[in-house]
Amino acid sequence: MTTPAKPRSRDLGVPFEGTPGPLNTITDVAGVEVGHTTLVRGEGKLVVGRGPVRTGVTAVLPRGKDSLDPVFAAWFPLNGNGELTGAAWIDESGLLEGPVTITNTHSVGVVRDAVVRWLVERDSTIPWALPVVTETYDGFLNDINGFHVRSEHVFAVLASAAPGPVAEGNVGGGTGMRAFGFKAGIGTASRVLPAGAGGFTVGVLVQANYGKREHLLVAGVPIGREIPDLMPTEGDRGDGSAVVVVATDAPLLPHQLRRLGKRAALGLARTGSIAENTSGDLVLAFSTANRGLGEKQRVVDVAVLPNDQLTPLFAATVQATEEAVVNALVAAETMTGVDGHTVFALPHDRLQQVLQKYNRPG
Image 1 (cartoon, rainbow, N blue to C red):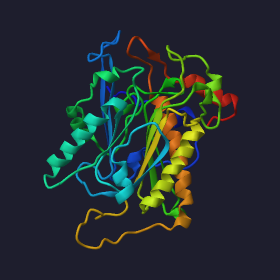
Image 2: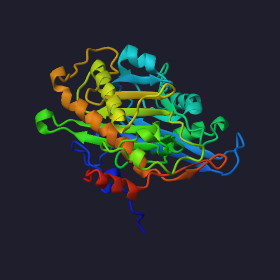
Image 3: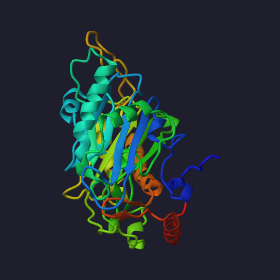
Image 4: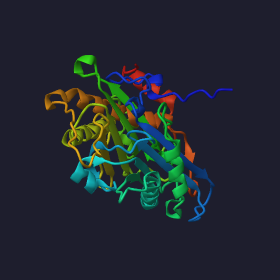
């Protein structure tokens, strides 16, 4: 028996701008692979070290498991109450030299160490590594101080990474996350530019864990104000964080990728983000276009898209980020975690009803 695929926001009639790629995921950028390790066990009262556990790890590999060839990259902090390891070297070198892993706030260290070991086991000649690990906080549902993410989970997520469809919602690093008072987590989307604009692809993956209910917008419609119930059992603080990974096959240099990352922040704003004081809203953008960037001896020729041709990529990034967040909300399912804390899923039928009320069905 085949399990039906979860509906995504477009399946519910949410209208979005732009043309998505074949899968409408970050893996529409050729070569990109994604994996998740999801940890869910236990229920009831919090016992630190035992659970309940609602967490995991997500990995994005720019060139897949079989290539450590660096890519041009840049990062952008919309608000800095978060962590993205390796950021100083990205700023200095303009390169991303391995996978991007996303987990919970208190598991950054173990994930970083595991990625270093994974890199060294793949290439023993590597003298040092500064991998990129980033995070959002899942302590409302997860025993975050129990440190349940282990090195074997990181090895598993890197081994499982693959091209093709990407699971969304309560998976990987997004397992215990919430946004706008609803259950959220991982979401992804893509855009393909018309041939006249280069035909390039932009793919986005988000770990959504931010926003107050009253601010939630879907396709410009105030969904949060129209669905004020189904609040988390401990209320809606509205603080939290968002991680955005932007991938493209357009030939961009690091300073151009930073500009792309800034536009992802506009995509978050379209969903209602105001980047609260305690929010860690971090964006990492990379380009798969130029190869051989790890060369140590010879001059490497690179292709560069003129700045005057960047605007369609900016629009694609805004659009894909917005849709990725909504996809995370649509895919996520109601979850109960530590001490019985419950976060409810965004009800699909009511979402559709509100869109119709505002004459915004797709």
